[in-house]
Image (cartoon, rainbow, N blue to C red; front, top):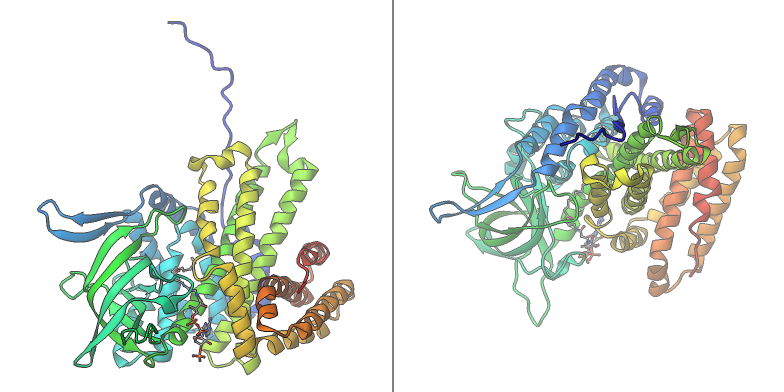
Length: 547
Ligand code: MFK
């Protein structure tokens, strides 16, 4: 048979990641600006080493996990119910690396005092897009460690806590956070799990509909200690439970099914029956939601750092590709419109990143008891805002980056689409955009969030002295005045509620502008002035306030 000569032997080179720390000028500048120089001298080599590791070895593991999703084996060959979750071997490697790298531990060893959290979150930012969302179990484990610090008894502090913050893969433990039930996702008060007290111990019976990272060692969950009376449910309490008994069998848990999700497919998310699970009451009875908020306020910051880490990763790939791909006689980076589109995506990732990095500093201060009341109130109000704002930005950004690769960006085996599928969950789990907007209102109503924000805005604006920042400063100041005047017109509960989402986005955008002001004042580089000017001119005009 006649052999055909191929029309062309052209193949497209792939985008290249080399070192996600050394190549991320913004992250480097941010850390060099806000961390003491002696600390930077110590941690810089670690970040440089890890930046290379996430761009090489970890990506291989993450891809292997994404391509080999978990499976539920309900029965063994002999008919015995086993409920085994089979995960890719690389999933365990990603866990071991998380332990060795101290991704939770750094925040609790507190070697660098309140600065430890910023260092930890910088490493999480590098790790997440190369982790097949192993960051999810880490988030819940970090939140669990914090919860134990706050409410744990000696048993929890001596055992589980030490495992959660271990750097040794052999002793490292992870935790789940089980809140969602068939009856209630956003509204956990509709929970139908009950806790029965027997000789000072509790047994849980109920159903958990959406439990992430079922391969964890322990979980914190909510249950009611009383049956509903007159159709009213009792307030929920918080419980700790080991997932397995000492002999390795499940602790009164049946795994009904694994969820078939749009993204986060490497992460085993299960539907569980609690058929008599031994559990331990944590904190005050009936105050379960308040107690577990300590945990989910941490996971919400993890959610925000995860969103921006994907924005950065997608940008790094698109940027690299723009210097490789040719169209219409030149590299696509040389086409002015493509370059401008990329620039906007660069500004978007940097601007969004500034929010969770700032929150990690406030969290560090709170951990080390250095936070003022104002810092605590600011952390409280900005946590839901940063979570909802960055999640939406990451979805928009992942979609734009797919386009940066044209048709190739739509092909699963380029590993570009998985970014969009994975970030889509970030606006849902840990609270949807509307639920978080309402949480912002709770922070305003109960925790002095607004005065803290307005005072932070005032102080940041008045500290600006660079002449090049004066125009931006005037615009931002005006935006804050509009916010204050808008809020003063809100009176009824309905007016507040109807405005919650607009307010959240408005404050998110204003916070980013304020944080840019502070950063540029300390790190006055030309490209950052450009970024702030773009932000002030375009982004801050996208969201207006209207009752
Ligand atoms: C890779 C990224 C990492 C992400 C990890 C992902 C893991 C995925 C696992 C999950 O998705 S777990 C499911 C997550 N589910 C949620 O986040 C639930 C979303 N719903 C809410 O957040 C609702 O607002 C909430 C359930 C909290 C409403 O419950 P309630 O009982 O109607 O709240 P209520 O009565 O307003 O508040 C009860 C108490 O908690 C109050 O305190 P007091 O008792 O002192 O008055 C509130 O002030 C307090 N509270 C509520 N939210 C708080 C809070 N305190 C501090 N911070 C908060 N955010």
